[in-house]
Amino acid sequence: MTFSDHYFDIDRLDRLSRKETFVHRLDPRVKTIATMLFLITVISFPKYEVAALVPFFLFPVLMLTLGDIPAGFIAGKILLVSPFAILIGLFNPFLDTRIVAVVAGLPVSAGILSFLSILLKFVLTISAALLLIATTSFPGVCHALRQLGFPAIFVSQLLLLYRYLFVLLEEAMRIVRARDMRSSGARGAGVRVFVRLVGVLFLRAVDRAERIYHAMLSRGFQGDLPTLRPSRVTAVDLAFLAATIAFLAGFRFSQVAEGIGRSAQELLR
Image (cartoon, rainbow, N blue to C red; front, side, top):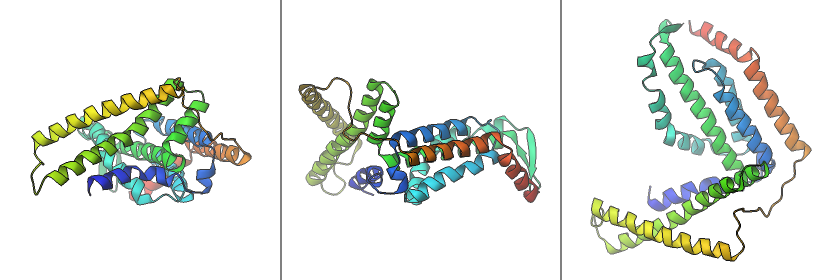
């Protein structure tokens, strides 16, 4: 995959957010609140809980299906950052060797359960966050946070960070393209050349940021970035939020998930 392919792959989340599905038409504030509640609920489970987390995959699967989001794309993004979660719990099976269960005749230690719990929580939370952006867009999520009362400086920093990520990538594409046009074969691919390219990119980025910042000040920028598309919460939005809360509360505080886990253990014995 070339540098340009990587660039347009990053932009794919924005392109997916322009679809016209039921999930896309929901109010951004409602989707943001629902996702936050989902993340809090998943994280609140004890570190040795595994079976109770499985039913929560229903939420991202429904969002994926109703939003017409490619499952392979979301799975690829999750795999891309999965080494961080693996490194966090990699040594748990070696540090916590207490046997707490027997599955299919094999002893399962508490460390293995905690490691699996970390992986499940990671997949659930990352998939929910990616689906929120894929069905709302990152600027839409930021404007929803602002309308929910988050500080203007925090939201503005998020928006500018996201916007200038693409500006930085465009500058990098120009530099790489110029390098390719001036080199042949393996020339221009060494570490020294790479360091020089990074330095040029940094200088260009700083200069570009200064020019854009002064342009924003001349147009009345005062630290807040208002949206041109005011949103309105409808009865459908409230119904979606109520259904999400009922789903999360039902699986978090009832014995349904525990019953599923016990049934699975009985089948594997």
